[in-house]
Image (cartoon, rainbow, N blue to C red; front, top):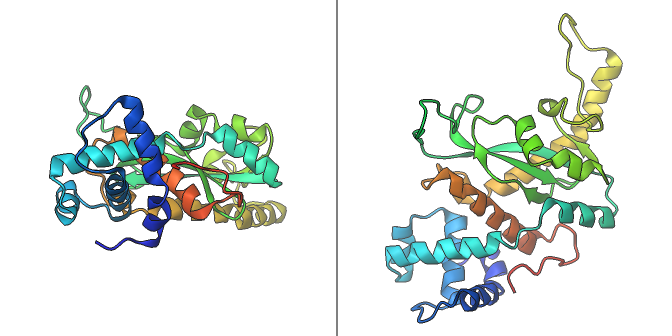
Length: 269
């Protein structure tokens, strides 16, 4: 299994954080070093392999591979920047606004435990999945990923739960699509036809086109998140574990892309 560029970018620094984590929790007598653990973790995120196939390709038992990968993901997720820090860096970079959008992460079917309602089923996407909010730079670079909510959660509800508008609009502007109308008085969205209104005025249409030309770049952030195969296939584990996975991806995106151009995130060294 040959290393890809994004794996090589993180392997050189990942063992340092893993070593400190092992020392902190008092783990001793590990049969595999931190470099192997970093490789397994990045390969699992990049390729979406099963633990059995990933372990077999690297000479690691399935159960041990699962333990190493889950621990590696946990270490990466803990290094993800909070939204307040992202906003601070965006202000320092001189940006005028950020872009918020929602994305659905597909999961396997999950039966509800206490009710017949399928909270993880998205009527919009016609599948089970997790709802995630992304915040992007003006050029569409992925900056921040929210926790994962059940797939039936609409974007505006998710944004309210994570207080995205309050944290961003205190310092910067915020662009969003029509699904976020009513989230905050200062959020910049397009115009929607009111009930009984046949068509929008030409001025509102022009405003919608101008806003969409800027906001559409935020779709790049969703695409960067979905570049990680583990998030494009039906997630086989408990969907509540997806928050740790997407936060780990956020950390690796900073290592690979360096969105602020400052190498600010010494995430795993």
